Amino acid sequence: MKLKTPLDEHTVRGLTAGDQVQLTGTVVTARDAAHKYLIQGGKPPFSLNVIYHSGPIVKGGRVISAGPTTSIREEPYEADIIRDFGVRAVIGKGGMGDRTKAALVEHGCVYLAAVGGAGVLIADKIRKVKAVHMLDELGPTEAFWALEVEDMPLTVAMDAAGNSLYRRVEEASLQRLKALTL
Amino acid sequence: MEGQAEVKTLLELIRSCATDLPKDVEAALHQARDRESGAARKTLSAIIRNSGLARRRSVPICQDTGTPVFYVTCPPTADRKSIREGIVKAVRGATGSVPLRPNAADPLSGANSGDNTGVNTPPIHFKEWGRDCVRYELLLKGGGSENVTRLYTLPDARLSALRDIGGVERCVLDAVHKAQGNGCPPYVIGVGIGGMADSSIALAKRQLLRVIGDVNPDRELRAFERSMLVKINSLGIGPMGLGGKATALAVKAARQHRHPASYFVAVSFGCWAMRRGAIEVEP
Image (cartoon, rainbow over all chains, first blue to last red; front, side, top):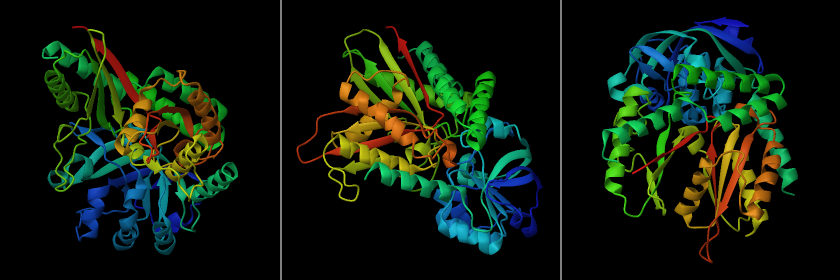
């Protein structure tokens, strides 16, 4: 399924955990320092319709490696940011917790999984760097990079109806763990 | 390690480590992919394609080029200060040329040094041997896999883990279950048994330098490694934590003596992009 930004509520509520999508449009990187900045009242000069948990390597204005970072570190912030900035999709790896899951349902947002470590494959889907915010203050790893992507391959891993692929795996693996350690 | 030539050799070690996945790791990923189906198979195929592209273009496999951790084995007479200076110089150079992502930030101010060096950074571990040459081993250790490191003290009532190999097993399974997909599985898992709190984690992490197909000379641990791999892969966490058979590519364990009061078990994780390398420099 092909998706184009800006994503609207109707579109994201139509997605189901397990769907494979290709995203075209603008995504904005935000990781630890960027989330803290937003929660403390910072306002980036562009829309956060799609947030990408990533600290890319950018050289000479070109992105050469840009896989996702571990999303769970942003759990303390993400629910509020989804509410305050009208976020419709969060891209990352590893999944997020219950508070974010509830925010996805309440506000109409999805969590999309990118393949962790596949920095070069994903960089190939980035057409250009559109803008950067807080580069001097946060440094290149933590800055907000607005990236234009084309057909970025993603999996809907947590949907706006409260389904989470990670939760299923976690529960099944817990049952298995209990059987192994009886 | 004063000369320009040695710095160049180290720079090449860092570059190949960041861009060229070791052959044994790649072979293990291929085997894992062949056993998977559906989404897990697609994920592993993407991972393998990504590694091939990175090698051909000589660009970093993953944008997190990690913290470079050096393990130096040198003759007792070697000048450690100059070895250290050579490493720091090479890391600074590689940050610009490979490039490596600047990954050294001050914990309080957040200021990034910009060149992957700083207080105790890069970490360098020394040991001696009887040979004349200097051996450099390097791990590029990503933050995601580092963050799921666990340290246990036995006995652990919550895990019903006693002070024996069965107790160690319970710790490892618990650590993998807690890690889920957050450290980029399929993992290489290092286990350190015994020692002190810090040396236990150090021993676990050092196991990540071992080649996937190597044979542990410690017979008891060899059997432990094999049975743990089967059990871990039965948890179903799978590539990137989205379900599947391949949660780990290998388990590598080692033991060291402990204080009678202490029984530490450390579990260290390498992500699928298990970037390591080694070179020997003749005097």
